[in-house]
Image (tube, rainbow, N blue to C red; front, side, top):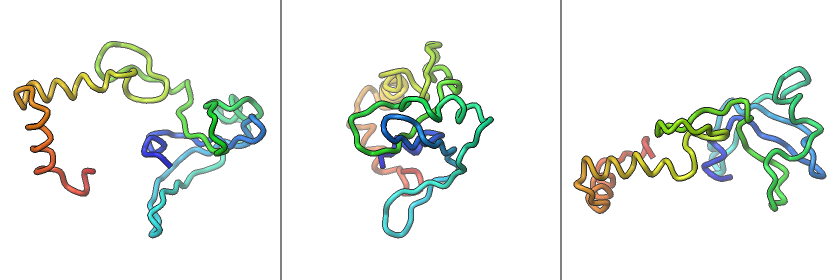
Length: 130
């Protein structure tokens, strides 16, 4: 499971190209075997995400044979954190806009040197932050 999955709010279980069940993610955990797992509740009829998806096509079409897809419902779209105002249906940043604040920090605080930033990061990071 990718780290991206942990930023999402719902899990769709898909069979034969159609959503069979939707789970709202409540918590992520790392069992002793090192894998990642989530805990959540199966949504039932009457919940807006259940009603919009169950019985319909896969909301995250992919070539993967994995029947589980992690996503945010489009109704939870926000705007890009860079301030451009672009709608972002499944995350915090419009495509590529997450680079803007990173480059700003490198320019403002490290004289434009990515090497200086990386050296500082390696020195100052803690295992709890990573």
